Image (cartoon, rainbow, N blue to C red):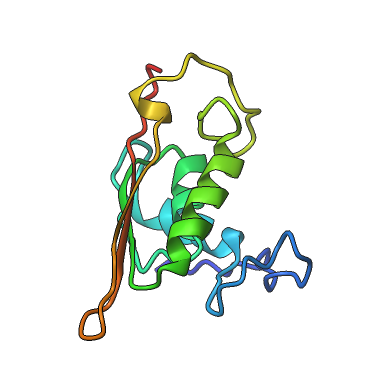
Length: 137
């Protein structure tokens, strides 16, 4: 049995850029390893408990698709939206690990749809962020 020890994972930095305001934020390198070990390029990766979108960013960079980012916190709406837009750049194209961002004409793959269900006193808020990825542009 082959055992992998990941030695390149550092704690999330304490800079404003590294910390996104989510108390359980995970290092991007950790999610990179987990997604590489459990999926292949083109596979669908769920964004359950997406928080500040670290798993979605890792999936995007590694050429995986993600259908939805789901979280109970309304804070996730802003964090997911801001982080995915920043990660993909103005052209909406995923930044793949080791490859520069590529410009393409905006289309369905560049759209980021955010849906929030308002919370009430008896019901928690739910957040979904959908971003289909297409290599054809």
